[in-house]
Length: 485
Image 1: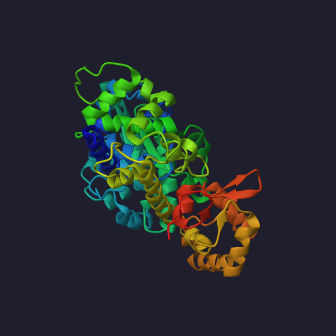
Image 2: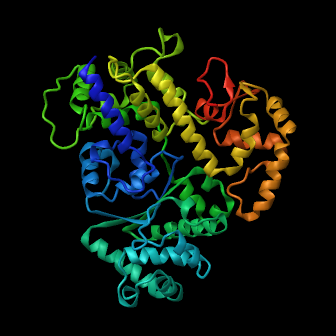
Image 3: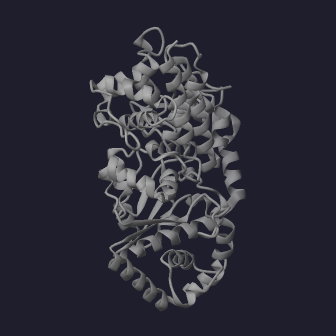
């Protein structure tokens, strides 16, 4: 039994807790922050639209960028993020319930029934940039929105004054918006609010020093009722995406382990041994992962072998932990969210025997994928409620890879398409992101599932379902991770 393995196991659990990006208020230490090379652009204040799947880090950045301590760490450890030194960051809307800072979902529902959506978000901007005069004396959101809607010219004058003040001081103001799917309780209200927000975010680009950054899921950018306005293409063409490559995920893990209160010292020693450098240096402030361990996958795999072993079983025929874990968490678009990755690792750490020489083992990693699959399926069915209805009949009745006709046969037997059409008809315009190709029947729904990354095709014919969905949805696969029952 190794004391280093036990402490690193604790570090994995600590890291997973700190990286729980479902939390709306970021309280993680700066050392648990990592910026992949491809993500630096998403932090650029000139990038207004940031797209990311569930668990990719949208809420993480929304809740974290307001921290001066974290921004200071980014300046030192990740200068490629290029955040201005004199930058003020404020939150314009998010999953939290800070109604004093911005109107919450309940207030937004009332406001959008009485005012233009753009006026609502302009009132939020006016509050953040501290308009003076009559507006400064208003204390409620209905009063502020009413003033903005009735005083278009005054709004423009006050905005220009605020921009000039920032110019004089050499400062920049960045206002963050997240959780657009929680703007209201139903999509009848969400769509106009989201559209109005994107329009106002685009309007703010006419100023020199005031910028908005809107974090949004890909599905919302595919909704015509949200993005159908002039010049949306300008926002979309310049958007940044929060995508995680395999090297990025392991770099984030190593960055967190090296800064964990338990096991951090032990992990840093192993990390420096792996790259052949001395670990006898003093750390002032949070530890930053050495550059070689951020991008060199050969070194990363060598380091991860020290934690999880070399094989997913008695030999490498079943795979190597470093590649196996990510491969089995990828969706059909080859994307993995940090949330899924850390959920799997935490399960593996929690289930590892205390007296094992390794921090985590292959059996725990396999069970971790099962846990991550459950989380991912919960997320996809929350975002697309119709998915649960069409996947339920396939549970226990299908083994992949399979042919399209095998899926169609089950749906035909269970009258799944009829049930789907009936459900969506009852919901009407309140239906949440219905399948876009439903008019094509079962084949159209399969096309939509492919678009969501839930299915992909092998050699253009056979249908495969990635393990991150397959396991929790209860589909079989020869030689794969066992489905949940």
